[in-house]
Amino acid sequence: MENIIINQNRINVTRSFLPPKEEYDELLDSIWENKILTNNGPLAIRLENEIKTKINNDNFLFVSNGTIAIQLAIKAMELSGEIITTPFSYCATTNVIVWENLTPVFVDINPSDLNINADLIEEKINEKTSAILATHVYGNPCDLEKIEKIAQKYNLKVIYDAAHAFGVNYKGKSLITYGDVSTCSFHSTKVFHTIEGGSVVCQDRELFEKIKLIRSFGHIQDEYFAAGINGKNSEFHAAMGICNLRHLESIIAGRKRVFREYDNQLDFRKIEKVTEKSDHLEYNFAYYPVVFESEKIALEVVRSLNQENIYPRRYFYPSLNQLTFLESTQSCPVSEDISNRVLSLPLYPDLESEIISKICKIINSVVS
Image 1 (cartoon, rainbow, N blue to C red):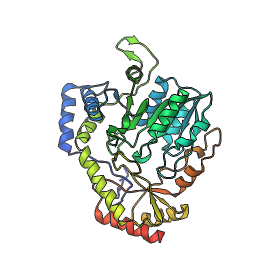
Image 2: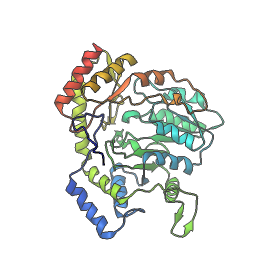
Image 3: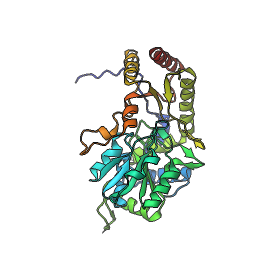
């Protein structure tokens, strides 16, 4: 068997948080004792209840990942035709729309916070439009008030892809509780993770019960009500979530420390920072994206950092309206431009100060 050598000195864009092993082991022992591994077991229910309390919303469901969370929302709301969405997000946001045989209609983004430009939404609405699917990019809140007014005016549903938003509060309320439905990712790269996982949060209780039903194949015991899917998650993933939730405040505090060190050391005369742009915001410090003056400079930064075994990420790239498998071409010049020039820098709670200083010196040298 060939040995796989892992470079322990490589600095990636993120590093998954792991709780003290004894905390996880204690919950694993309970799994071995009760022999329940999945199917909405006691740990999955416990995690749901703990998060319900944290976000002050009872309509919360733990699911297998953030992608299926959006699929469940689209199915449960019986959306059809076209969905207005952002071109600046992870590909899952667009993939789900296409996967569900709907048409994504892209609206360009604000150059300041990189969220969907709410002022451009109305011009894309027609008789085929059934919903707006917007992403809180890097945990920055979308223009919630304006999007809500548009949705009410045209009788549209609103889904927020809040994959980056767990732990963010806006105007004293959890950001993952806005919209008709908010979906979240608990992937291992996120601020809060369950290794693999995600969630759905609803405003309407009837919709919540419907999503809960189709998350579990559409049946309860021997009674079948709908054509559902398997969107449940396991006790092992729930156990990781229970452990990590205990450490969420310290995780965010550690990330904030890294944020401020970048803030203090980067030369912003030729670099733009695009997070923490909203008022009334309690941020989770999910990503540290910076936008350079040109794609050439961004790629030179990547090359220079890679030479030192440091790996930022072009996140998000490419602009989703340019995905090659889409049936039609839609122009989104701001998103297309930004996606070529943006980099997310390494960020995790225990990233060493000397590494941060090294990253900043390299970037400052390139941009100057």
